[in-house]
Length: 117
Length: 518
Image (tube, rainbow over all chains, first blue to last red; front, side, top):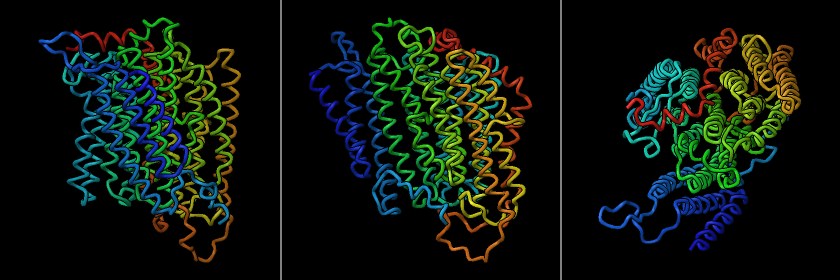
């Protein structure tokens, strides 16, 4: 199972980084979404992989349980990344409507259009 | 348990939604509430600073859960100082934003402003690295809104770049936290200090990865080479009062490096000792160089100031990279100074750009208050460049004095001194183009084509800046002068502050020991 989880994280991260480097709004949004999925799975794995175990100590059962803290961390991370993606979509849309381009990097002429005036 | 410690987080957190939802159509009410809230925050910060001044580390346990299991807020001299710095800066910036009407040029300025303060104060007070991540996100999401406040083509594009950069940084932060949790089993800074110290050097590989990942994340916030490239575009295109408030945002990164890397991975811990310093020092030297060349090469006023911010962050981080109490106290003095110097420059730049209706560094006919603006810009520029009599000179002197180790001295001294010289030249060139040559430029026929205005959504040039619009800039300058005049007591206090920061055992005992302050 370790190998499956590890390679899933690797593939998601690689895809996310590739899309991020495309430097156009839509691929970058998808890339950041992939990266946040990767990091969520990674956070889960940081509490060690365990199957069929409850995250709380049961009074009656045996004392085996899985670490509950990473699950709380993942929940926080999911909420935050969801909100951030929504903000990013809105700002990306706003920038596209204002500038009529979905390039993320700003060309040199934009930066220095003043001096010639 | 004392509840004052959570107030710098709690007060803006309650105020911001109130302003956002209840007062959204009532600008005078929103302004009053925001100003009152910031004044209250300032009063609380002063109270907290006097509370922390005696050197005790106060701990606030949320829900009264004991430290490694629950979340804690920690108030010591350093965090109290940073909260006070935030509150003072926020007050100055807010008055400027209200006086110049920036807050009315888009919606929700005051709500976002308060959320931003909540995030910044929380990041300074927290004693838990995951909580640090959460507060980083709070301050970032507010800063996204503030960054694109009042809109415009260039600002939206720069804002998009800023958001993407920081989202990638946040993902990296989570990876670092996951690695740290997997290898140590805790995310409380005090507990981390204990656990990491127990890991022998040969088994610390994973922790070392986490340390470097965390440092990259903080370096993104602190605009350190090679991840400094977002800063000039962001600061140059942000609304000027927001850029002035962002002066504290880069310091959040520097503070996080100081807090986390000194307390948890700092000197005396076998697995991670010297790891951060090895990378931080050369990166900071290059950052100084980038800032200096940027100042020299900038062709507009706002990028010029933004690059001088990069340079000042380099100087600050060179001192931080030494990880010694003397250098840290010099770094803290320079940190306080550069926050106000940056803010002051952005505020005066806003007044100048508003009157000139363009921020290019080309001579145009002299504005109404050319002499006054020239004097203010001159004062702020010598503060930033590090010339006497303002505190920049003393700050750089302290930093230079602290870096006397033979290996560091050559690099640090030559970088800081050469960087300062280039910054002086850059500012002198800008000042003479803006103010001096302007007096010799004849006024053209008043056919100002609105298409040529580079600053988007700038209002029609105002005839004269009122006293209230100039007051915040004056206040920032007064703080710089005060820092210089009271340099003795201030640096003595900062010396105590950095001693407390390096007293790891004291911090750990205060946070972990359940009997304290119960």
